[in-house]
Length: 146
Image 1 (cartoon, rainbow, N blue to C red):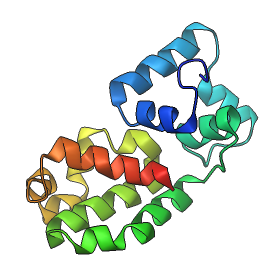
Image 2 (cartoon, one colour):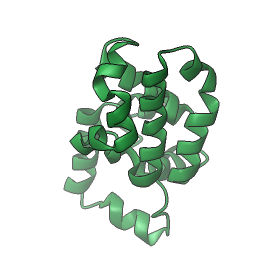
Image 3 (cartoon, helix red, strand yellow):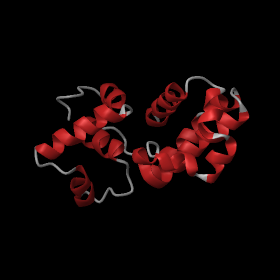
Image 4 (cartoon, rainbow, N blue to C red):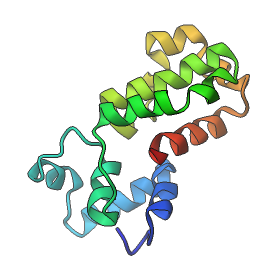
């Protein structure tokens, strides 16, 4: 992993891009390293794989999913306050969904079916802030910056 991303910042940039992250995980699996199994052995099931890899590869402080999700919401209050209210609700919902399912929960179509996200307008609400894919990428950068 460290050979593909030499620093934590490089790893973070790789991690927020779904295709690059999947390539990294596939590479590990092809070398017979199961991230899920290793996380279980280390008793780190409450941690997203981002934190597991960050801790072991870069000696970063690992945060449990609920901790990272809550920090995302609390550390970005001014960002949420400076945007359309509905978009802020959707983005806060990302933090809450990360708490429940980690990175994968942010990249599943069912994300848009979560009641508070759907009621707030989902992707349409994000359009009020910018290009939805770019807004989501910024949200991930902020989420993993904590």
